[in-house]
Amino acid sequence: MKRLLLLFAPLAFCLGVSAQTVDITWEKQAVAGLRTGVVASNASNVEEAMGYVKGKTYYAPNGRKFKGGATRDVADLLIKAQPAMAKVKQVIGYSTEFMDRVYPECPLYDWFIDELMRATADSLDRKVDIGIANRGGVRIEMPQGEVFYDDIMSMFPFKNNLCYVALKGKDVRVILDQMAASSFQIIGGIKVVAQNGKIISATVNGEPLDDEKVYGVATLNFLLDGGDGYYVAKNALEVLQSNGWLYDTMIPYVQSLTAAGKPIEYENQHWITILGEGDKK
Picture 1 (cartoon, rainbow, N blue to C red):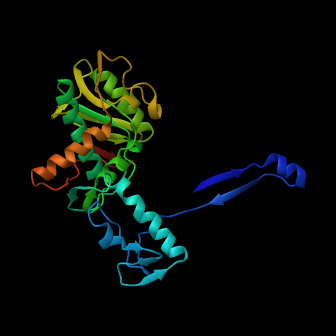
Picture 2 (tube, one colour):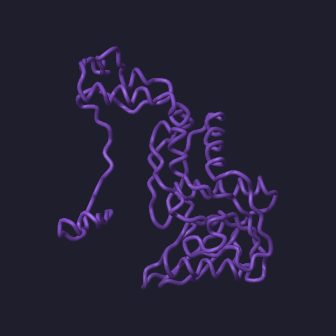
Picture 3 (cartoon, rainbow, N blue to C red):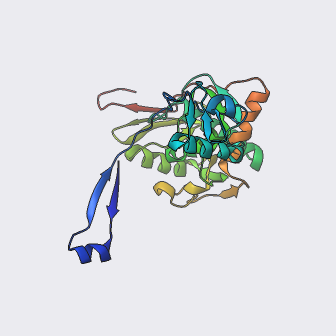
């Protein structure tokens, strides 16, 4: 739901009417192609998926012909735009299943944080123990089947850099306590159990989180100093930031899976456990 405030002050003043608030709703709908047979195309099958325009006639994939009119004009506009969209419509991977974004944890979040931790360690040459990212940074779900370049760009659209932060366990605990009291973000490498808005246990590699031990944390620059209310760099002993954006990491990762003959797939790692009021650990 979005609320759009229409303010036409000079006109409203002249007409003697007041500003109005208009409610606008929308929902995502799959392209059905009921009249034309059009389906979403990739970079190499535009004519097969969308048809073609010749002269004043649009030839649809289902064999129908549209002479002139809005259907022909819209088809012509969309088909002519396809060359400029070719890069983002490349198929770069294959996902064995649909991965939804589910709170507090899901295979998509775990797949992402695992790669964030690995890439941060490799690019910044530091040992990474824990990963912390914001759920809002993963903008769409992972589709089942073919995965486009645009799917990954749309999934991770923000210009965030990978960062390494060295933190003592007690400072990691502060971040986890903040999550437990409000809303968990994406974490990896550390198993936490929360109850009644508090962390009751946290372990790294099977060992209890040590308040005085220094841990390597992979995160994003957005969260270093106030993004979504988190200050991951507070009290940091070291902060390193990589070049390039997050999607510059995730797109080559998907391409590397494909080159190795591997699909995109993952399982819930159970980093986060939230107990009910009467549950026992």
